[in-house]
Length: 68
Image 1 (spheres, one colour):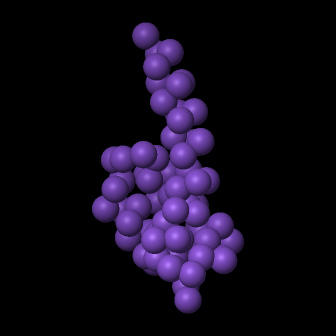
Image 2 (cartoon, rainbow, N blue to C red; image 1 turned 60 degrees about the vertical axis):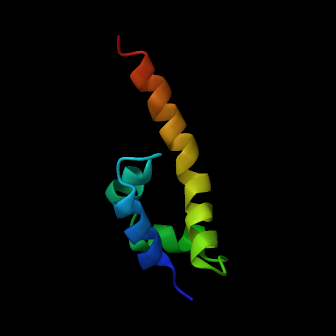
């Protein structure tokens, strides 16, 4: 099964949360597909994607914390 559209839909629904905007703004369908390629369920695909974007979101938060 191809869960790319499911991941993109989830990312849009959670755009302002936990770095999901990065998926929409920075990842192509092919890149998402590579990341989630072994997922067996929609939930599994979303979790695989989150494992990739969580460190990016954390790093962004650290940088934002140093602005002031």
